[in-house]
Length: 215
Image 1 (cartoon, helix red, strand yellow):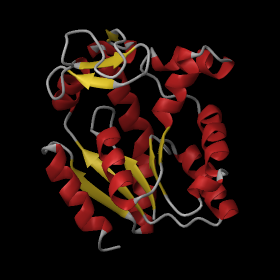
Image 2 (cartoon, rainbow, N blue to C red):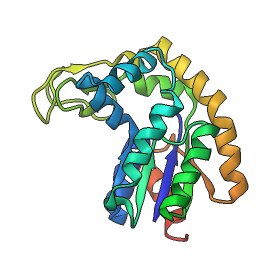
Image 3 (cartoon, rainbow, N blue to C red):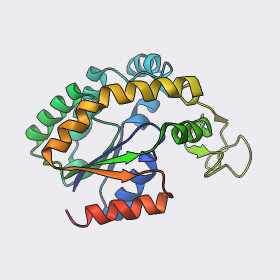
């Protein structure tokens, strides 16, 4: 099963990607985690990506495309994957389709999590990330056991620059502008499904399973 999960920042893509991967025994590709790893290690790619992320802008297509092509050529993805965070522009879609043809992968569906702007802002301004292991917590939904400390490694929890309200608003504006063509493209292919992402996470996953189990 080959899936793409779509939605604005803070829509719960990471949570649902993990649930799908576990339930259907397929690996997950989370582009955000890949980039954060590069930024933490201050690689050349990480430094470039950080300039855009901290301003609430999407990372340029050429960087995204290179990462995805490298990932999809790994043997682990030959039988399936759930991809979170790509493609986000029509140029990425065109590149992605070329990769799929080259690797003989047929995409089964694209799931779009729908969440309103006010809820997105509430969720993201409450998000905290471990500065050491990159684990993510939310002060509203899953707060750490000890304030400011990661449950997993004891590292310091921080608010990422892209989780500040002014940056979130810019991210949402950019997201809507650049992803409209992507959504229309997959709607026309007949593999596009909308999901109410404002529900409880378990209800969202139940709705997703109803779709995937009937593909």
